[in-house]
Length: 145
Image (tube, rainbow, N blue to C red; front, side, top):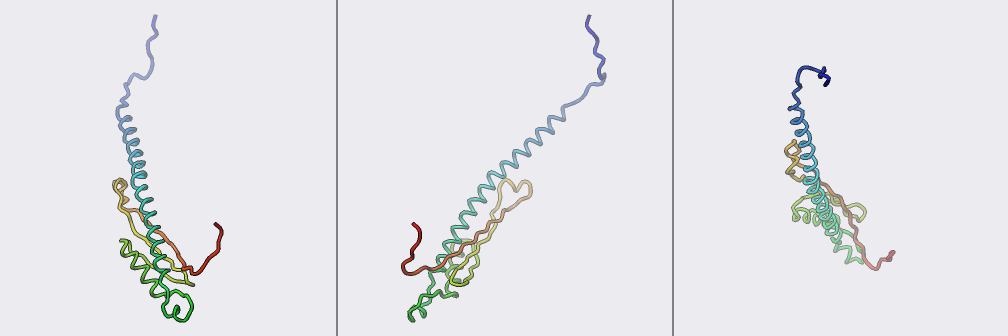
């Protein structure tokens, strides 16, 4: 003879638990999608900023002082180097700053990249920055291959 069920006599309504689980899962997937899409865009922009900063520094390092050349020495013209480097960054679309110290041109580029997916959670843009330095070398240099 079957034994009658003596458990809780009130039925339980579990329908809302599934909705809450699906919403949490969806939120996690959207966060992951945002990291992949917007994080990838930020990494690409960072690489582009590094290339721009390196090229701008090289452009500035090529600004040799004409007066120094006429006197027989090779020396960087600091004002021309800063102007050339900053002109390059402006032409590349991301204006930056340049400094000269001891014959080394240092360029800093900093800007923000708009987000697409992370904008849903309030992150409208991600910061991108790069710093590069270059020095003019003249004559024959010897180094490890």
